[in-house]
Image 1 (cartoon, rainbow, N blue to C red):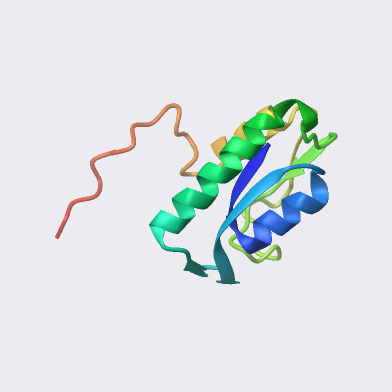
Image 2 (tube, one colour):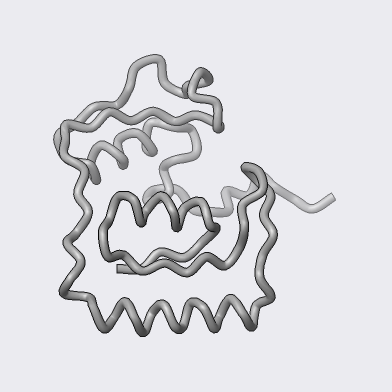
Length: 121
């Protein structure tokens, strides 16, 4: 019903989800670079978009991605894939968790956040 973020993600979701409300609070310049609105203006835009979205919550159909699903992890370059083979599954949530838990850092439900290995210099 509502997406907030940069102008690029807002445009992308408007193409995919008719009737979705958006609040662009920054202009994307590059992958890790954006020109953000002042916090007061951003809060104002988000608040207005929330009110509008809640008023039309029943009009927007849920966005679904039909399976089966194939996931892999990369660092912005699809050629640099973490897994030799994609993680595949019929359920998106389970496939996502299988992929994340296959990484050295993905056992967030099992491992404590602070494993004691990091210390300030």
